[in-house]
Length: 157
Ligand SMILES: NC(=O)c1ccc[n+]([C@@H]2O[C@H](COP(=O)([O-])OP(=O)(O)OC[C@H]3O[C@@H](n4cnc5c(N)ncnc54)[C@H](OP(=O)(O)O)[C@@H]3O)[C@@H](O)[C@H]2O)c1
Image (cartoon, rainbow, N blue to C red; front, side):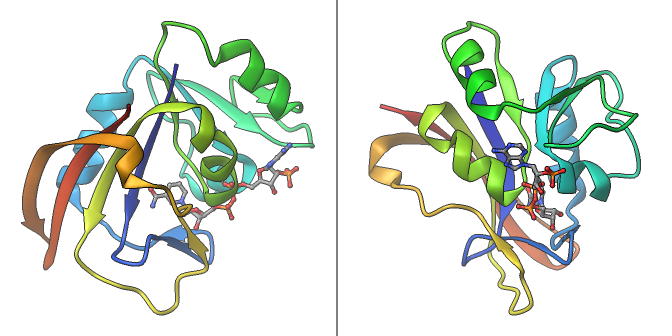
């Protein structure tokens, strides 16, 4: 089973020039707690935006290229989706925009940190999903670094 996890702005902003836009401690903690000991799947650009491998998680990178660092590199994304979409194991899809777009139709859960803020310089956006296709549960609400946020779990109906 795939679970998407992302932090998005009011206009579904995700990132700017290969960096995150919103830095919220509680969101970072939520991300770590949710993904720890799980497989995390990301695009090559997201991998390059990280300071290094995410500890205590199996780092899987999707790329047409080959390089050192991740635990594995997936060249054939569609085959990976076919092989894993029906497993009981929760596999976390951690971005970026191209990977969220590709995995959205196959993802059971979306963990979205919705930040009540916008960024005009955003260069990548979360796909336009249909909330009515999901049940929505509030996990946490808060404010940090001058940013109001709510963390929701959407589960496909
Ligand atoms: N707000 C959040 O929660 C969040 C989370 C994650 C990332 N982000 C942000 O998102 C941005 C990066 O997103 P992005 O969309 O630009 O890049 P990305 O999705 O992270 O990576 C794109 C790369 O993934 C590989 N790829 C994608 N589709 C593929 C396919 N079908 N087959 C093989 N390889 C494939 C390609 O790598 P190759 O070119 O090597 O082939 C492609 O260049 C950054 O700004 C980052 O900070 C935000």
